Amino acid sequence: MCGPGLTKRWLPAWLLLLWRLTYVSGDKSRVYLFAPDAVTLEEYSKANITITSSSPVNQSTVIQLNVTYSSRCNYSSVITVPEQVLLPVETTSVTFNVTAHDVGQVTTYLLSNHTDFNNLSLRIRFMVVHSNVLSEINQVIGWIYFLAWSVSFYPQAWENWKRKSVVGLNFDFLALNLTGFIAYSVFNIGLFWVPYVKEEFLKRNPNGINPVNANDVFFSLHAVLLCLIYINQAAIYERGGQKVSRMALFLLLIGWTFAVVSIFLAVAKWIMWLDYLYYFSYIKLAVTLVKYVPQVYMNYRRQSTEGWSIGNVLLDFTGGILSILQMILQSHNNDEWQLIFGDPTKFGLGLFSVVFDILFMTQHYCLYRRPPEYEAVSEQQQD
Image (cartoon, rainbow, N blue to C red; front, top):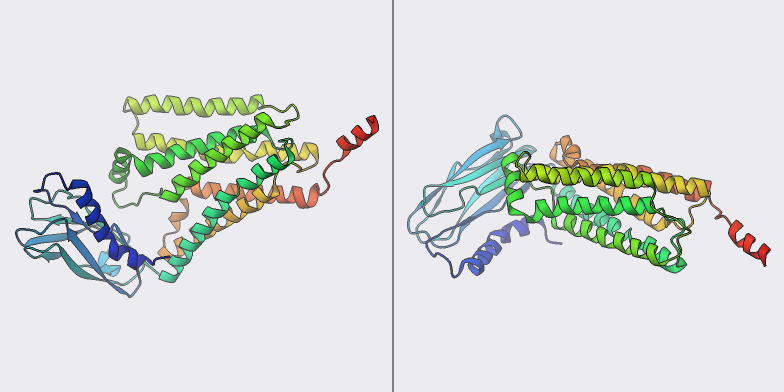
C-alpha cells in the first residue's frame, strides 16, 4: 500500500498527464493549475507541496493561497502556509513548504493574476492529525470492513445453492434489502459520477470532502447484484409456499412513492438534485431499520435459524464493528467527533447491523441450537 505522502507527491504529475491526453487537440491557449486536493500532516511536521501548470507560463505568475476555512479561530495555530508563491516564467511548477502545529483543518483556494488560468476554484484542504500511523490503521480497517461486508453476501447464496431451498430465508427481507441497496447505489453513483451533483455538493459544502469513494460505489452495486441472485434462487428453489407479505409491499410502496414524488420536485427545481440523492440515502437507512425484523420473527416462529446463513451474520457483524471503530478512531485523530454523524447512512448501517447481528447470533447459538426435525419425522411416519 502506498503511503499518503507518495500519493500526493505523484498526484499533480498524473493530473498533468491526464490533461495532456484529454486536451491535446483542444485550445492550446488554455492553461490549468494542478495541486493536491487534500494533504494530511502529522502535528508538528512539515511537508513540501507542489503546484503544477499544464504548460510553461509566459510571465511570472503570483499564486495566492486564500484561506477560506479553518476549524480553529486562527488558522495559523493549525498550520503555517505562505500567503502567496511565485511561478517563474517558462516553468511549470513551484514548490512551497507548510508547517503543521495543532490538530485541525484549513482550506485554501488558489487565486492567480494570470488571466489564462481557467480553474479558479482550485483548492487545497490541509488536515493536521495526531498520528499518521493512526491514519494508516484507519485505511487498513476501512478495507477490512469493506471486504467483510462484500464477502458477507456469499454464504447465504452458497447456503441456498447447497440446500436447493430458500426455506428459512424471509422474502420480506429479500425485497426490502434489494430496495435498500438500489437506493444506496443511486446515492453513491450520483455523488461519485455526476458532475452537476458534485458541483452542488461543493457549493453547499465549500470546505467539505465528497463522502462517496469508489469502493462505496462498488460495494452498493455488488450488493444489488447479489440480492438479484438471491431473488433468482428464490424463484427456482423450494420456497415452502412463502411470498412477500402485504406489510412489506406497503412499506415498499411508501418508499418508491416517496422517490417518484421527489424526482418530480427535483425536475421542477423545488429541491436540489443533491437533496434528491440524500433522500435515497435516507430510504436506505429506513430499510436498514426494518429489513431484519421479518427474519428475526421468522426464526422465532420456526424456533430455528436453518436456512439463514450464520456466515452472513458473522461477516456482517465484523464489518459493522470495524466501521464504527474506524469512525471513532478517525474522530479522535482529527479532534472532530461530529464526523461520527457526518455520514448518517454509513453510521446507521454499522450500528443497526451490529444490533441485529447480535440478536441473530443469540438465536443461532443460544435459543435455537437444534434445527427442527419434525418435517423429516413426519415423512418417515407416512412411509
